[in-house]
Length: 406
Image 1 (cartoon, rainbow, N blue to C red):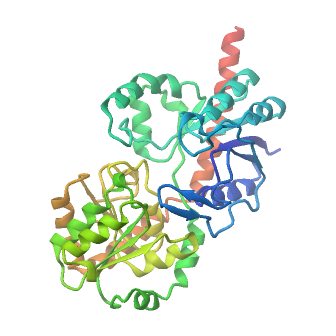
Image 2: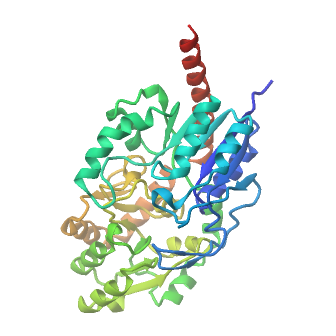
């Protein structure tokens, strides 16, 4: 008889990447899931401080899987900050329901994380933590925070029966922290591949480019992310200007506090005529952005994974990423599916753009190889690995209990 695991997934809020995966999990005969949200931001309109605009995702985020909204009693509700989420209902949920495992995705700098951990420990429920970090550097590159992490994280992650991680880079980080390898499971960071592939089939590339006022055969490089300082969108702008490949264009899909400075710098560099700022692009329109562009560039100085790389590859594009982008470990094969350059090294990025944007045939060939690579990085692989991680967590909890009783 097939063993069915009842699993609670604790998440901060609905996101466009997570919800499709919860639907797939809900379809698995081995799983009976319940997703608990600390907030419904995303499914409901909210002002995203990263984009700087009001956001409500235009794809369904709460359909076809079981979920519950936990009341947030924080006096200052917010995504981020320890007291941004205080959801005492998770205590009652874990203590009263018979879950076989609890997977916590909220991050430890959150009061609700610790409420959930305490409830699971007292109830004796196996715990799984999710993290996508691949090094100890915080977003603001603070040295003292990195030192604290090096001291704290080995103790933190040992609280989990299993740590689920999205890249081989995070696997290596857990090993460096001396987390036992049998308690670390690689669950690839994926998107809903089938949806992206199907959407890409229906994109009228020429029509999109006409709307952008870009020639059909022009080489185009894409930045698709929030225009935030740690994403370093200015590095791409400057590298594009220095490369100065005739007839090439630069497209920014995203919004945020750096948009106005970028537009001003594009004018000062005399490339405003070859630069397009699309603003915030909702989820359903992203496939046409990728398909109508060319290589994706993600120059971030802080990027735990960078799921835009998955999306671009599913739409037939290669990716150029900084060495701080977690996707580099598993998705970027140098010179085949993309390139990696040192974060902040505008000269290195300039050289890559100059070579690649001058060779449209190579762009096409690398895009094809990117498609083949991402075809092996699938939701099915993620689901299988997640189920194995749950099994391992249960085995570890049982083993620990037996050792205590001996």
